[in-house]
Image (cartoon, rainbow, N blue to C red; front, side, top):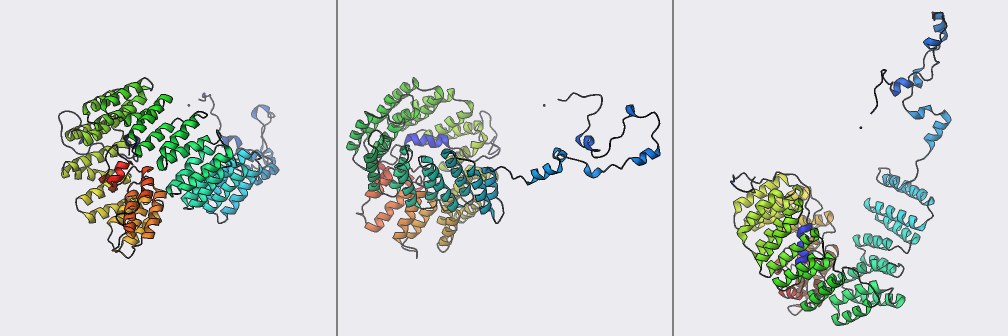
Length: 619
């Protein structure tokens, strides 16, 4: 990833909530923190309760003492008084209603609502589908406005999706589109369900139809183009954009044409794309983040000078947009230029925003060899940051020192970070400490911290993954399998745990584990990559390159951020075509990649070269 996305990943990472003592050990220390360490006024008479007030309702009233005759009430008088019938004692206000009204109230059905519709679908009634449909029909009959009808159908479709009633959900999205054909949200939601079900072509057709109907076609174009890119249907992209231009012309089609320019920057003629951009700028306003995407796509094509120029244009046109400054700083080539860009940004952005910009500048300075400036920037940014955010600066400082600075400083930085980190983020810091100890070969302390994890941080699936990987690096495969299985028992839908389980399992049981993994987490790209690896192994009975290609396609559709997919795509091409295999298709996909994690990819990755021609050549 670029340095910009690198810091975004670190800063935005929020692990699962968990509770644990921050102290990992009990080593005494002399200085500095260590890792180890609503009134009713009262009246004279009590206020009767509801039961007391209504207790004698239905019985004849006895004369009050102040209105009685002078003679005393004798026994014959008492005999004339019928007994009190306590069966009429009331306990709720509705009991005061006449019988006819009470019967009418009890027969009245509740008002139709989507809440009741959802409750019916979530019930155990065997006829719940029919009952829910009748409830929805009652709701729809009360509405005549197309916008309201569309919203009702979309909400009902989402309810059905949550209850795994996918066919009903798709039918309701069709009704939403019939009621409100000009609403782009209908097409986006409809295509999303189809994509999740693996019906990619149908999803593409839904978006394609929406583009030519909706006035807000620019909301649909990026999604459709991205789907086409994933499936390497580049000609389909150009055909759709051409049809849109012929029907709408400029400027109506401009928002979608701009998406097409970015597409061509990634896969086509850059010079022609920039010429078209200059023409469109004369009649149209570009979106705020356009130049960030443009400059980044150009950088990945290996044109660093042009990338800096486009990024410079972005900050000139939109000087108050933080994303433009973040990218501009991340592409500077010298510490001096980086510091100058940071200084220029300070007059355009708020103090809180500058603290984030500063972290990117610090990373860039360190990357360019100026650790002194990097440390100074981080110290100044931390002094202006809110107390609950300062731990991030120390944590990021430890990352910079690990990559470019002095490793001995890492332990001290993480010591202090641990004691000011919010509880919800403690596990992130502790994992960094454990990895540091492993890096310096202090296995005793590394094992001690992982032991603390296993006792108190089981709600975070990453603990099981990292500990298993630690055991593998120590050569303890059987124990690693044990802890992966424990993690799966708690986090049964976590694809990365399942993928590791398939990797570690004995070859005779791998296919069985793969089936279990797919059934538990069918949308996990990591699992489909493991399926592809099995299919590319000529020593197994599952060797089938056609199946491997299908598995990698599924993986890329489900989890494009898993960068190891590209490694396996290249390997497949080499198996099919030899050392002189055509890698152009994988090359184009790689340059537009979204990957931000992986294991194998880091054998080739260097900061600042993420998804560039240089990194592809290294792979």
